[in-house]
Amino acid sequence: MTSREHGASTRDTAAREIIAGVAFYRGEAGLKELAADLVVQLAALIEQVAAAEGRSAVEVADDLFRD
Image (cartoon, rainbow, N blue to C red; front, side):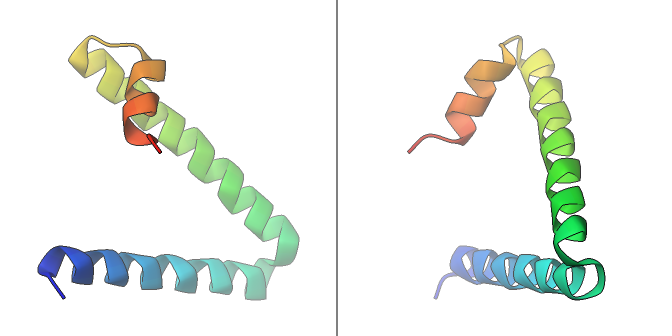
């Protein structure tokens, strides 16, 4: 396993633990709130990157989420 793969595995594990904790303590409503907060923060970050690079937010998002 490369250090990059190990880092991704660690991030995946941490994300799953956060989600499990929110689900346990806050239930479905907590998960919905977490998802909404993450979407808002991701959109703000994409807009910041787009502004810094002189591109549109759609272009940045397309680059990030290419299949």
